Amino acid sequence: MLRASTTAGRTAGRVSALALAVALSGCVADAPSTPTTAPSTPSDASDASDPSPAAASGVEPTGEVRELVTGLAAPWSIARFDDGTVVLSERDSARIVRLEDSGATTTLATIAAAAPAGEGGLLGLVPLETADERWLYAYLTAANDNRIVRLRVTGSGEGLRLGEPEPVFTGIPKAGNHNGGRIDIGPDGMLYATAGDAGDRDAAQDPASLAGKILRMTAEGAAPADNPFPGSVVYSLGHRNPQGIAWDADGRLWAAEFGQNTWDELNLITPGANYGWPIVEGASGRAGFVDPVAQWSTSEASPSGLTYIGGTLFLAALRGERVWGVTPGPEGATVEIAAYFVGELGRVRDVAPGPDGTLWILTNNTDGRGSPRAGDDRLMEADLRPLGEG
Figure 1 (cartoon, rainbow, N blue to C red):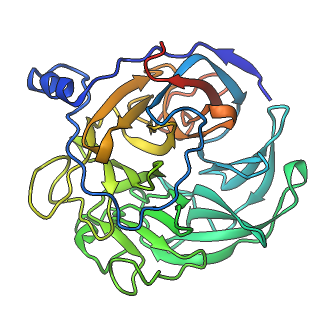
Figure 2: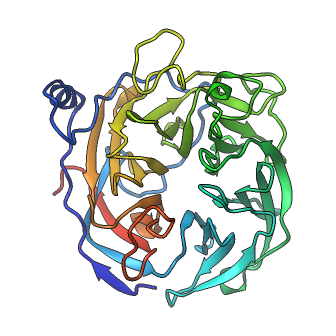
């Protein structure tokens, strides 16, 4: 499946919360911002599994980065089925493509309901596989809304096929930007989705609006009885444009969020909590709002994808053109932070666990905001090692 290889970026260095605070107080350029104490563990945290065989004390990339696929067009999301079959979404073509062992791609479906424009189009993907049925869920921007659909999956490997899209949840506000778009299945079996404020800042503070929220629903799109707002799929509020979600080994939900002009955020999500936008951006210490566990200047991050492997959260940074590694301590109160591949791969849209304890990295230089290089866009693979072994 490998087509070529490149040199992996050197780490920018791990730093403790104390070192980060000192760096900020001295106004050191390009230093990550001070992580703040996280809120308590979500009440519904349960049996999340760590997809990496590495120890949960943290991991980091090592060695060469390998190219798995090249020539993608504005790819957005990586999804892997239980049998190892990998599919990707392309935002502007509205295609779902399958990766072949040769490094080529095959179009499995083109989502006719998608209306790509600006930051909208075909966005997040996630498989849901049970003993009785298999589905691929997709988040997309349609003509009048953002919505979640699902496609029935049959076959496997090169014989995998997708049925016609079936609506699961509709009516999420859309705009030319701030559409959110990431979806995932939680350890509780529920479907989670990130919804941006769709340009309506105040809607993020309105529990009755779906804009600026993290949503939680059943696989059929219904509001679970134990959601924090009765009869609503709203799970948390006060978000500007969250685009990354992941669960750690303790079942805690994390989300990466685009700020406006000052701070991008990594948040530990608890049901019903308010993360402040547009009243605050970044850590404020204000009562009623949850501060981020870590934050960065918008030039260093613009985080789109998020994944958890071996005790470390990896964030895909678009404008920052790097992958951030954040290894939270107990209760998320202390963190180790490092930057990888700085300026080497261009804009990074998504990250995901690869096979055999690897990290997969999806670039996004052809989305209209990057500077495409020969072969862009591409899916890359990096080996991981326990922190401290280098």
